[in-house]
Length: 100
Ligand SMILES: [Zn+2]
Image (cartoon, rainbow, N blue to C red; front, top):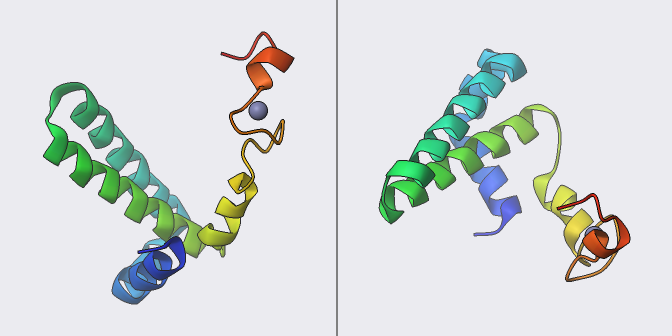
């Protein structure tokens, strides 16, 4: 499934309730899911991590939709590698020693 298909599916599945909740409420849910992902990464197994990654992605897609952002178009920014140095692998660390 690509990002366009996912965004379309999420909109069809949850669009009405997401619109009613609004951006601020949805952002709160997104952050809560990020917290659950953090716990899954630190304390749980692979299956739980996969589930939490999917939840965070779904909430990110919802937020993008509420903000009229096409995520597939946004991802194009990384198509050719690092958007800062335009290289892949990124060479920013060699250009900017302060960057990790
Ligand atoms: Zn870079």
